[in-house]
Length: 253
Image 1 (cartoon, rainbow, N blue to C red):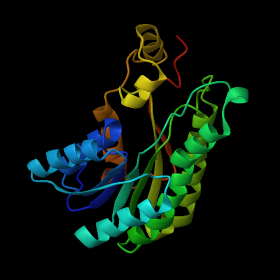
Image 2: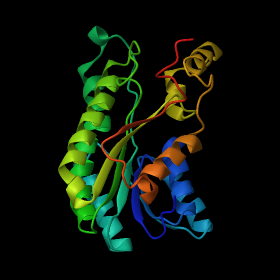
Image 3: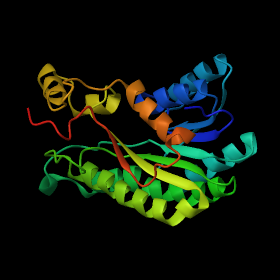
Image 4: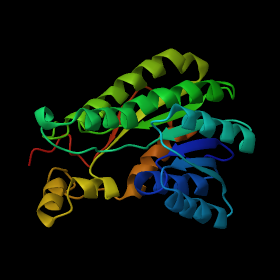
């Protein structure tokens, strides 16, 4: 699963799955453009890659802003000469709670960050990737809203389910042009977002228990799945909602 000299864009790269993917992709030879909102954390990841002789450019911004996506693609083209793929990983859980009590601002914020951002990303990444003869786009979705319904996560589930529909359409539209598009659906993963759902022992034990493996994933485990989708090892894989969920979708015990 090599990415030698492939130019890959990763969002949500300041921590968790995105940071793990950035470090892993760099180890496998990718030239990276990484993005996130938090400048200090993003700079730390970029420095780690550079110190290991990796090729990386970083740009902070908000994926809910279309101009940010345009700038990320322009950075890839200016610094490295184009774009071969993208791991659109940035997302938010929002404020969990029953839908009747949910604020419109929370709903709109979750949809903007998780779903509308994918529209913006696609609008700017697709022409750049096609200009290089095709490549791979990955969107981080979730088992929530796909195989499992969880109370209080209405906005999150709707946004993540929407990504799967978008992925299927893009895969059908652009497969003939050599562009593969897939959704990656992690299970519970030890990230700051998971902590925001609940970090007390009772909640953590519950989350572990709904997985067949009876544990949560390390971000690197999800990054390895993204590496497969980004690389030519998955050359006949497109339009999928690929589960890397530790068996939570089939676990009933």
